[in-house]
Image (tube, rainbow, N blue to C red; front, side, top):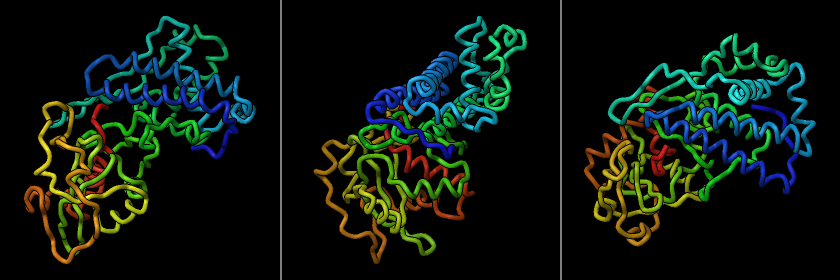
Length: 351
């Protein structure tokens, strides 16, 4: 999002990474609340404050602050305009009696639950006149970047901007994933769930394939061929839990393995129990391995077989599972949405 890079010392990194973690977690908490039916305003106001904290630190405490401040000089960069818009809303919240809260315009959902998609409200003219002149000058940025825009999308845009300035401040979990991400898939919605995810479906599919899948490991339970394309199928596990099956071409499995991801082979059906009742927001069955997965599996020794085979569940079930991703069966955006849910959302669905 920005061609500018900030010079951040090793002594400065911990503080910036901690604030970035706060921002990331506030985005995840807001998004989770959109499915919980609670008050979105509190989460929005928390996010505004945390973003402004990082903005203040970059402006006033960073050794290389002159590089950051220069982005806000006229004409300001697109990223700087976005941060100015956040600052405007934050100042309204911090200094005036006006309650900053999003407008809940649409609800989307179905089999797997409802989710609210909220939008930034206009700031009334009477409220604007009460602001200091410096904050009033930020109103055009708010109108252009936030007002009327969907909240989650603008939150992700802010994360993208900060990460483009200083990738090293992104807070990551023990698997190397952004802390708090990916956000949980919502059926029939193809909007990005991750700060790194492109908007274009074709570019997003390439991005999804270029990174290793989320989770700890995968267990191959068969091969299914459709229209001449052979797929390895199975289940992704994280902490002995599986929330999603997977469907991968031979070439993709080989890329994943080359990238360091673990593929094993075994009979999932014989070694797991259904625990979906413990995860009401899961978008499908949830399996729990009774033992450490490595105790009933063996390393994958080949990625292509002369004949199709299946050891867990039926060949018909796997054929249907493959159809949801196979090119040409479903519209590209729908197929991508299915694949993203399987490859990206392999972790515990808390968001």
